[in-house]
Image 1: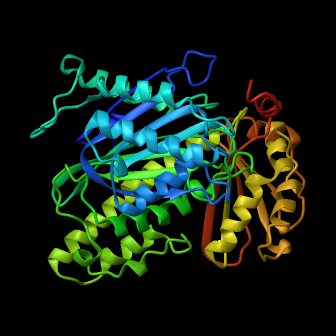
Image 2 (image 1 turned 30 degrees about the vertical axis):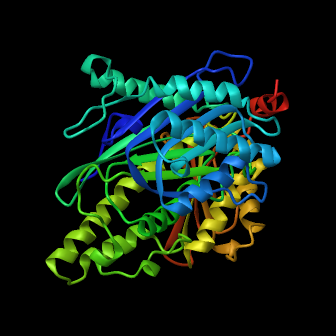
Image 3 (image 1 turned 60 degrees about the vertical axis):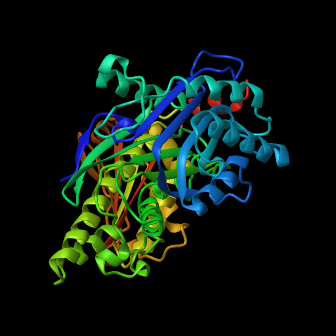
Length: 463
């Protein structure tokens, strides 16, 4: 059974980290450089921005993921290392080389990630010096059989977990809260963990994942299976988030699995499935596939592996959905989480298209900010989405913790109480439930309201 636990990215066995301020951005006092290490080279899967303008670290990390193994990651805030040409890639190589030198890992196994202002070159000498200093301060939780001597705050696990939370803060830019979560699950009779963190508040319309995100696990899994699982789940979570409609140059999400929990490696062969059964587009829900596989008559050995697969899917989805919702609610300047749930669709793609159109509509987002029951804006956004549906069969109900109110009934505006609508639209989480009465498929997208503060933040982002 999947359970939420403490620890963030240090919840899983065999990971250590450290973060500090090196002064990448001249103002402020926040930590801006983070170093993470796995005791053993980990299977790595990743998803990346579909923006044609890809930052240098994205180009570097795509090669690391293609190689299948990762041992460490270095992350900086303040400068995105995007639109930096060949010098940007050289700086990624220099970062990876310094990490390799200081931690004793292979340069080709080092992920480099950056977030911040597009254009400037990294202060590479500062970062190299910071990597050297951080490598001497790596903190993690000892476990049975570890060969790594590490600092441990006098054996206090809670303090080590606090350092994981500090790392979640260190990767923030305009975020107002750190975003981290960890879960425990059972695979092959072994207790396993997945810890994750991400950052993302603005320039978010991912079309892949998030601004920057990391999942650290101690399970053992084949790389291609992990890659397909991640892509399928990203499509149902992070790719259903939009803050402002802008797809970043730096979007990256990586999942490491170092195998230190001791479970027998999960493979497609051990589950007796073809990898093509996993729909990476997300149109076919991988969670439904997991249920189907467990229900089939197979040998006990195969069934055990399929149950491990189902448990893993539930654990990863729990993490990715939490991070996606949290990222949307923490959109730049946001005061409300705005959820669009489309039901009654003939297929998932129709529901997905409609839901995303609703949360990306600036007029709808502004109405949510103003607590304005102007549901015509949501109806309009559905109409120009490109999805086919019958407006005369459509119902739109606005919902919150304070109740619900139908604002479109079979394509028409019914009589309603403005006072009641204002009350329902006042809490900090608002859902637009849109039923097109044409099937059994549904989709959920997460966004936020559009406020004056969003403009203020982005009018002087560099200063």
